[in-house]
Structures are given as structure tokens and as C-alpha cells.
Length: 271
Image (cartoon, rainbow, N blue to C red; front, side, top):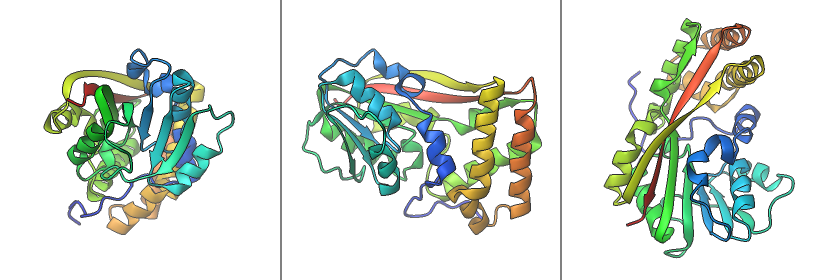
């Protein structure tokens, strides 16, 4: 079956418990470090595509008494976000459409989006909307993985198969899994200025980190929306997905095991 993008993009990961567990691991320190030096208490921030809200809550704690709004289109993810313990004062969560946000022009000092643009059919249009709600002189902060640059050791053919299946499925869903390398181009196309690119990585190489990362993907490749979509597209059968999951768990037991996820980051001005 051809890998043709669909007209209305679908969220490749879905919101299975294994996905939300993975996303709740994210913090401002491990996922938004490039932005932290620009933050000043009292700033107002919008977190676009906030998911279960752990990064959002961290940012809210750093910006208090500023107003921080986490926005996502998924009520399921927002239920998880609203259930976070010790939610900072000034933090709220709302549903919203990244292409038509229900905020006035110039509403926020910072507009942040982590792992969002890779899932959109028109990331430039989304960035134009982020520019609209960002105040003059404010900051737009973007971070997305680049799946093609992921690396691991030892070589495991089934993990290579997983990566190929993920990238094909993400593109069939209307997204761009290698979004990281496009962030500068998308920001320029949207009319952003003062673009500052950086890169950073997640690394899973200790025994505990390997086990956590492998168990997460073993579940996601067999139980989540990703698994269902792979089957729907005819890219792999259940036996193949089970073999990939088993390979992830074997890899986790390798004492020399190592996995890296490269992310591109951009901070820019709305113009």
C-alpha cells in the first residue's frame, strides 16, 4: 500500500496508557532546557499540544505568578493533566485547535510546542497562528524529534523494522516524523524572526532507562493506536509486531545497550 498522506492528519501515538506513561516522564529540564534561560517569573505562557501536562506544570512553577495555559485537542490527555498533584496557581488546561486558537492577538509572552509540529499536516499554518497569539518581542519555542537520526546499539533488525514502520505510519497519518530538521525552514516560512536553532538528545543507556524505554515501546507497538494503524494500513501483521516487542525487551537486557533520540530546537520571535 502506498504511503500517501491523508487529508486530515491522525495523531500517530494515540492516548493508550503506555503513551501517557511515556509522555508523563517529560519535564521542563529534560525536554525544554533550551528555553529555561529565557523565562522570567510573571511571564504568560501557552503550551500548545501539552498532552498530560508535566512539562506545562514545570513551566508554570518557574513562571509563577504568570498565567500558564496548557492546550490540547484531546480531552483524554487533558484529564491526565488536570489530575496532576500540586498544580501551580495560575495554571489551567483547555481544549483547542492549533490552527484556530480561541485567544486574542498578543496574549502570551511565550508560546511553546514540544513534539507537536511533527504530527501536523500544515505546520507552517500552525506557526502563523502561534505568531498571532504571541506578544511583540515574545518567544516562540519549538522542539521536535528527528526519527531518522535515532541510533541504538547493539544493532537489532527488529528495532530497525520498528523505526521504518513508525516513519511510514506517521507519514500515512499526514505528519512528518523527521520534523526536527525542518523547524528552521518552517519558522522562516511562517514569518518568524531572530531564529536561534539548537539540538539536544535523550539518551537511554543505564539498565533502568533501557528497561523503561523498551517496555514503553513494546507496549506501544502492540497495544496503542500506532499498532492498530499499522495493521489498518497493512504494513505489518500481529506476529511481526509481537516479534518487535520481544526484541525491544531483549535489547533492554544488553549491558552495552544504548539508544539516543536527537531533537531539534528553535527559539524565535513573532516578527
